[in-house]
Length: 632
Image 1 (cartoon, one colour):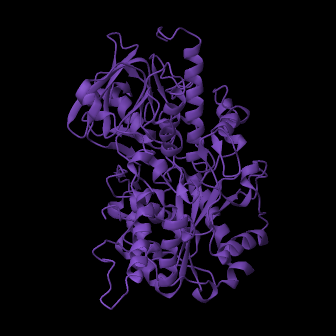
Image 2 (cartoon, rainbow, N blue to C red; image 1 turned 30 degrees about the vertical axis):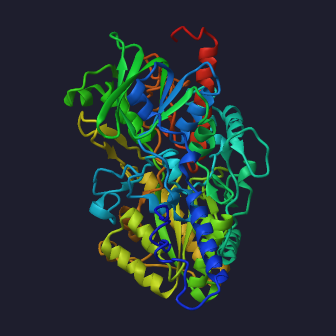
Image 3 (cartoon, one colour; image 1 turned 180 degrees about the vertical axis):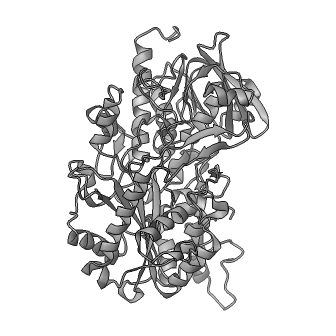
């Protein structure tokens, strides 16, 4: 059965392996029971991402009959683009086309516990940052691997699904930066509008629910250790507390990933006014002769057919913080000197690609006494596969460990109620491939990887991601060339600002305090020393050791943002106005994480859904105030 492809950590099953007939004598009913079970499991697996779940590819129809002019074209069926397209197509008078560079998600995308398996595949752009000698030194070629989704659902189809809104100060600050109607009181409504839960009959489409939980010993250790250090347990969903440890929810429903590609875009797949062309890579935005109005977009279909579509009203660019600036620069909107050096005619001289921000994370590893935590044996793992395929529950419906997140204000001299550090946790059970899967995904260098393997042979590992919430360092996106096939040129510039280093150091020291709590000592939790020769010159656990460690182990948590910044005319770095319109050009907006003037204090997927909702609202408001046949 070709659909059997869960991962290399889950046994591949074929009908050849299990023909349904035993060599010993049987009256028949025994063989029938086994065959029925196998067919049931295979059918359950194939039902995780069947073709009929997703919008059909309109590309073949276009090739046969040609394309009409669309009112709106959305580039990217990712987190925000799926929301925008779905909302706009709710108006039956508007024809909406979505251009998505990838196809339907694979089965692995739908199973929460194995999301790392989708990296380094055709469903991912496989981007790498430029080498700078200051960060990601412990990874392949000393470059950071920046995974970006290339399928319906975009990066929301390959992420860890954690749903975190950020806090009210994030959005109130956006308004103070000159972006009216982006304060918490404004965006909160959009968050609520998008939301649905298992317990709610909300009209929203974004599914946000609790994950299945396992390993209660880890839960107790984290919450109890934090409590010993004065950090309370709180309910993140209430939004009135911002410091402490909390159980975080995710974009999951009934044990299956719920990207907006599924919950928004696929929801409207039968609307006659909504079309989706898959494997369509946008290459250039077209404008009128004066360069003041978008008229269409060119794209490549199935890697070789060059096509184009005309636009009556607007183009909405939702390709993400890496590819949205790339397409703008390829089309002549960007830094003048950079475009001229590449021979690209300059339409608008704007700071596209600047202000790139990301949540740099430092992974810290705790070795745990395996006798203290019940480990799963092979029978348990087979039970987990069966339980998931039949009921969509169990360990495969979880994300590595209990989904607990910690928020910390690491500056003891500050009384701020808002965090500057975020902690995520990933449990790696001894005797499983969880560590190898993670190391393969991030491409950890051989020497460091071997020291982790050695620790994992003797016990479980708990990986704690120490995440910098409010980075002072900023990077940028540029083009390698004028060829659309080339990836964007990405400068992370991690650790450029000394303040970032000091904040991360405080975040590490807090975990050193956690190690000494009674809760951590009860599990014999101990920080693992990795094999990093340059850092071994310093005393283990000293400030200088950890500063060296940051350079090697620091990497992304895939929260790139800010590269097509919104802001007022007085902000020379702003590319968009507060309604997300490119300055000086009609009919062109951006809706994804790239619009953020400053990155939010948490995972970016939830805020990106909100941005999609806001963009759809702005577009609808603008076009409902004028005739449907009048250009804005």
